[in-house]
Each structure stands twice: as C-alpha cells, then as structure tokens.
Image 1: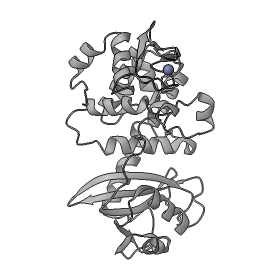
Image 2: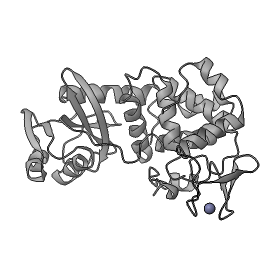
Image 3: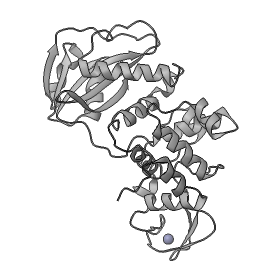
Image 4: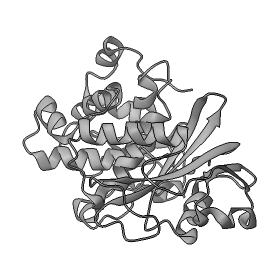
Length: 313
Ligand SMILES: [Zn+2]
C-alpha cells in the first residue's frame, strides 16, 4: 500500500528522526520484508544505524547501500526535507534554492542532490504512451527557431509526445534528439509509444516511415515548420517547459544535462492532477531505492543513472 504524508504536519510528525526515515526507506526497498542482496535470505538482525546482518550468510547490508543515498554524509532527515520541498512545489526548485533552504554548505552539494533525484524521477520499467498520441518537435535554448533536419546551431531539439484524452493532455514523454531525421524520430517514438497507437503529426517527411514500424499515422497539419506552429497539445507542453526552464532555472540549464531536466518536467507534468503532493514524494523515494547510484564523476560524464540497481535485477 502506498503510504505517504498528505500534509506538512503529517510529514513533520512522521519523519522527525533518522530512524523514522530509515524505516520508511526499508519498507520501500523491501516491501515484502528483508531480502539479502547476496543470498536472498529473508531474515536479518538489525545492527547499528542503517545496517542489517543477514541471518544466513552474515553479510552486512545497509538500507541505503546501492540506492541514490549511497555514501551520503548528510542526514536522511535533510534529504527527506529536500525531497518534500522539491515535490511539494508546483515548479520544483533550483539548486540555489535547495542550497539556501536546506542550509547546505556548497552549491555543488545541492546540484548533485538534484541531479541524483532527477534520475529517480523516471520509474524503471514505466509504461509507454498509448492510444492517440500527438508528436511534434521544438527547439530548446537559443532565440530563433532552427531549420528542420539541419544542424540546430547550439539549440537542442526535443521531441514531444503527448497523449490526447478528449480535450485534455494525458501523459507526456520528452526526448532530446540529434536531428529531425526519420531515424531519430522513429527511434524516439519507438522508445516512448506503444505499437498500434495512433500518431498525429504534421506533414514533416521525417514521420513518413511510421506506418512501416507499426503505428497508425495521421497527418493533422499540412505545415512543415518547427518551433512556430506546433500541434496544440505539444504547443502547450513546449510553452510550459520553456517557461519552467526560464523561470525556475533561469535558463541556466546546460545542453549536456538537459535530458534530466526533461525527466523532471515530465515527472511533474504527468502528476499535475495528483490530489496529494505526497504522492510525488512517495514515488520519488520509491524510485530512489530502486535505481543505481551515480557518482559526481559519472554525472559530469553524463552517464544515465535510471537503471535498476543490481539488487533488483
Ligand atoms: Zn545473506
């Protein structure tokens, strides 16, 4: 059962000690009870702090080992507060804000925390989009719209896929692509939309091959220009995305790390109608104990971290 705080009062009451935070992580990591990562045995003795000892093979297992909290020198209580803040705010928070609010000593720590948490915003094995899906591209960064199929000159090309639910937008996926070629677009759609779905696009020739790879293709607009005249749902997503990058992050997102910001935007957008923000808090922590930890060096080299941790494979 999903157990999460619904209000700040509940949050403060439930997570006021390291033990309480650890216990929450324990239950997220082992919802069916402890399981030894080495021998799969189901019984363990609690040692000091976050440590447990397997009753069969005697290995010592830390609740946070192999999670995004692996090796942290900061208390979990502080991490939980940062996560509560990040998920509670409609637009999230920048590293500067997190640094100030949490009283972190350096900007780098706040930046690293946010980068780690963004990797936990993609649920491992999440479902693809389905049904009727609008697909269009937009340029992020730079002032002028670029030309399709050519070098974007310092701008990132992002393909937007948005489910059409009557007059509303359903779930979305955002994907940075190298160019607007048929290969790049087909690959992005393949990774994000179930076969058999209806894909609505404009007349751009990069979408011509969709039928041959298993989609129903509807051309709903005759234009071929990018950036100015997007399909309606994609247009809305693109404007919100750009406003968020400019507002919360003051446009200071490097191309290199853009993918993770796209993940964060998607995480929040797809949960915009959640009754309780606590649900986002829960989901983020649940993913945080399931994906492989990334180090600062890996982040600099832009290694994707949203992979299932070894103890889950
Ligand atoms: Zn064991």
